[in-house]
Image (cartoon, rainbow, N blue to C red; front, side, top):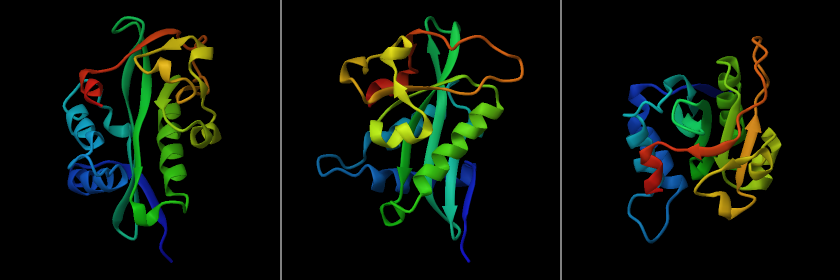
Length: 180
């Protein structure tokens, strides 16, 4: 029986992940979707958190990906948070739960590391299953705030340290995000 394996990304995954991202975000008007370059560019920044770059592998094939990288709320260094994205599943493995599994694995890993806040820009109907809700209601703004419901946030369970409420304010993204 073939099972889904969820694990952090390794250096050997770069090529397969480029193929998954390229296929999942393929559009007729671009040769390489910007999400492919986004991941490549993020790997070389301080925003990159290797333990939060989660891969879904099925039958030895990389079929899914969920990436959490560092963003800041307020000024750089003020309040750390995470952004979820891109999330991708190879077209031939979509709609069988791999996306849900890899996103949940990434969120679980973030919770274990004591992270408190995750933002995402995506389909509210999909991300609601993980507990995401409107980011503006949580006092969070970004360049994508004007898009309404797709701009979402999730407060992760507090760590044992009993930290206070999650931060509010403008979410600052690392430079690679400006290309998306």
